[in-house]
Length: 294
Length: 169
Figure 1 (cartoon, each protein chain N blue to C red):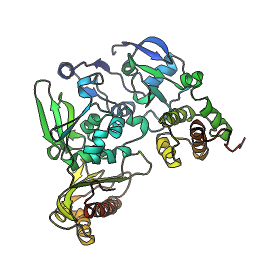
Figure 2 (figure 1 turned 90 degrees about the vertical axis):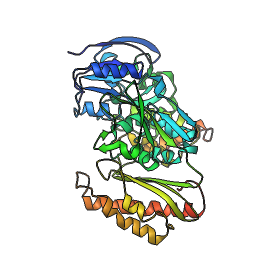
Figure 3 (figure 1 turned 180 degrees about the vertical axis):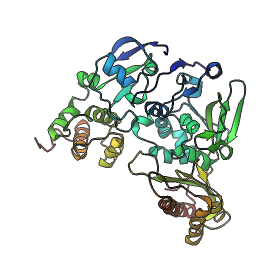
Figure 4 (figure 1 turned 30 degrees about the vertical axis):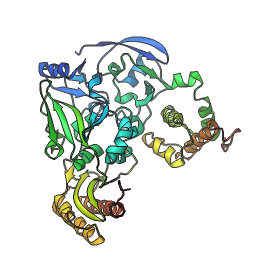
């Protein structure tokens, strides 16, 4: 289908964008890469009266590392995340997940900020942000605040971003040498939204887990951490037995509904399979004191 | 009634100036306003890849790009790539290997293939299939497409001097 009619304005700065949002009497939407929004408009799932294009705001671009933080501008495209040596070196989990994000042409236009602002529960980068404890930089043009990933994802397509605010960047902590990571997902076709996916960030040495954050995508209305499974692993050695206990604990953390893709029981089964596989991968990496599983 | 927006862009190395509705997609601008009908419209949701074009050198979906977004930017369609001769070898390999039947997906597939090959080297068949994950072909079963892209990659890398594609014609 074709998109319903809307007005369009190009913002040269975040201030301009916020002013346009506040001045709009109908529904205004910010446009970043548009790879989800324009599809939604074409499907007539959304019918805003005004699109405010953020695409020309150069201040929202770029990847920098400073003082233990990798700051990625919201307009950084998936393809740029995938190709970035800074990301590969300091935020390896993001690099590991990037090849799973859609298809090459989508990655050429879709943006990290767009993905996190939409917060599709099946998409990869929100789960990665949650697993890494990233912080979202949000601006209303006057003040800028940082929101922890644990507080950012509120509900289905709902985040801590208030109406009119702009997600300007995402801050990722620089990986320490003792951290190991894993990402994998199951999809019917390469590049499709995940049927289930998991991002893991563990810290430890010689097989012992000091800290771990496990975030699933496509398992709940938001990207979802699994505290019961995490608790089975923290302070323990990563062994076949503790992995089995963590996998068994998933039923306390996840309660997916039946949906058009599959039954809830199938999705739970796949979540267990995926977690078991990825923890086994991490076990090898953690024992070897190596950085970056798989 | 929404307000039309004036835009100027470079399309296949020619300057164009248009007055467009904000909701007009790039693919509809190219096909309906500029009569460049080589790129096709399929799903209009970024899944099928029939509408792929280059925007400032990167392959993007014409259905998931607004015409107003390309103001001041450079667009290249399959007509531009074809007329310049940049993909003549790729097109010849598709022809030789019979890597198309109805041809609806082919312009998009060629866009993807050219971007993959422009990175240099000879991609593995798995890499080629991965790159093609966003291109639906309902005729060929992909095998011949992968063959043609692989053949072109080897030729460009100087590994094959002669035609090696199997002639199914």
